[in-house]
Image (cartoon, rainbow, N blue to C red; front, top):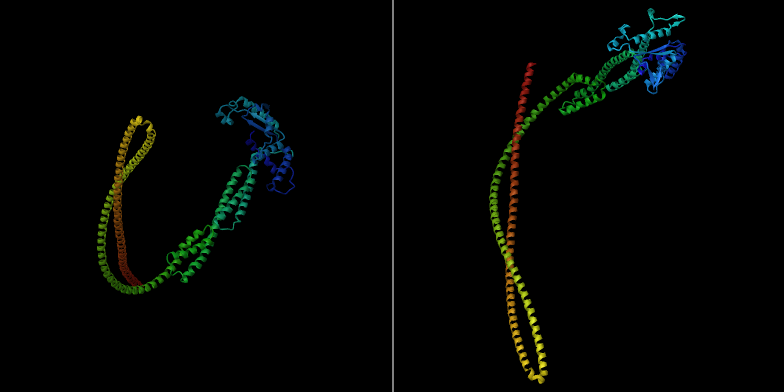
Length: 616
C-alpha cells in the first residue's frame, strides 16, 4: 500500500465535509469556514459517522503471500494497520495523506486486507484477464477468488434507513465514485465562480489607460483568481474542466478589456490631439508666425507638438491615433501653411527681382572698377617681374662668387693641412734632437764623474808624494846611499803618473769640446723651433683671415637669402592679389549667372501667371 494508493481514498476524507449525523448549529457554510473550524468539524463528524460506515476491505492483487518486515512475518491485516499509520513529514502532501489515513482508521472500524496472486503467468492472458474463463485462469487464483467472494458476502450487509434497504436509481447499487464526481463538479464550479468574481474585482480597480499598468493589474487579477480556484477546488476531472473554463473566461475578458481600453484611449487621444493642434499649430499658422519657417526650424516647431502629445497622450491607441491624425488633419493644416508660404514666396520673389536688378547695376559698376584695378595690377606685375629678374641675376652672381670663395677656402684648408703635416715632421725631428741631447748630457755627466775621480787620484798621488818626500828628507841623511835607487824609482813613478794625468787632461778637454758642440746644436735646434713657431703663427693668422673672409661671405649670403625671401614674399602677395582679382572675376560671373537665372525664373513665373489667368 503505497502513497498513490492511499491518495485514491481522498473521497473518504472529503465526505466528512458534506455529510453529518446531526444538524450543524452554525449557519456558516463549509466552504467559508476557517482551517481550524474545518479540522474540528472533521474530527467530530468522523467519530459520529463511524457507526454508519460499512466494513472496509482492501484487496491487493499480484501481491506476495509471504509479507515480512525486518524479518518478521506479517499477516495481511497487520500489514494494513501498519500502512494506515501516520508518516513523518511537514509537506502539504504528507499532511493530506496522513489525514486520509486517520479518516480511514476512524470511519472504518471494521477493516480487513486480502491478497491474491496474479490471474495468469502469460503476459498476453494477463492483459485480457477479465475475458478469460476459469479453465484459462490459474487454479490458485480461482480458489482464492472463491474464498474472497464468500468472505465479502458474509461481511457485506445491505444499507438500511428506518429498516428500509437503500438502493440506487432503478434498483442499482449506489456508486460512490459517481457521487464524488458530482460533489467535485459542484465544488469546482463554485470555485470557478468565486475565482472569476475575484478576477473581475481586481481588474475593475484599474483606472489607468497605460498598457503596462493594465498588464500588471491583469497579471495580479489572474494570479489571484488562480489562487482562489486552487484553494476552493478539489481533485478530479471537473477541476481540469473548470480550470480550462476559467482560463478561457479570463482570456475572453482580457480581450474585452483591451478593446474597451483601446476605445477609451482613442477618445482621449483624439481630444488631446485636437487641443494641442489648435494651440500649437493652427493658431501660430493663422497668426502668421510660421510663414518664414524652413527646414530645421519647421521640424523644431513641430517637435514641440509631438513632445506635448507624447507627454499628454496615454493608452494603447496613442500611436495609432497619432498616425491617423498625421494622415488626415495634419495634411490639411500643412496645406494651409503651404498656401500661406506660397503667397509669402510670391511677394519675396517680387522683392528679390527688384533687389536683383539693383544688384546687377551695382555688379556692372563693380566690374568696371575691377577692370581698372586689374589693369593697374598688370602694370605693377610687369614692373615687379623686371625687378625680380634683376634680383635673380644678382643672386646668381652672388651664388657664383660664393662658390669661388668656397673653392678658395677648400684650397686654403688643403695648404693648412700640408703645413700641419710639415709641422708634425719637424716636431718629430725636434723630439729626436732632444733625445740626442739627453744622451750627450748623460755622457757629459759620465765624463765629469770620471774627471772628478781623476782629480781625486791626482790629489791622492800628490799627498803620497809629499809624504814620501818628507820621509825621504827625514831619512836622507841616514839612508842617502841606500835610498837613492828607491828615489829614482819614485821619480820614475811620478813621471808615469804625470803622463797619465796629462793624458786624462787631454781626454777631459776632448769631452768639453764635444759638450760645447752639443750645446751649439741645441741652440741651433732652439732657433729652428722658434722659426717653426713663427711659421705656425703666420699660418694661424692666415687661417683666421680666411675664416673671417668665410664668415663675411656667409653673412653676405644670409643677407642675400633674406633679400630673396623678401622678394619671394612680395611675389606671393602679388600672386594673392592676382588670385583675389580672379575671385572677384568669378564672383562677377556667379552674379551674372544668378541674375540670368533670376530673370529667367521671373519670366517663367510670369508666363505661368499668364497661362493660369487664361485658364481661369
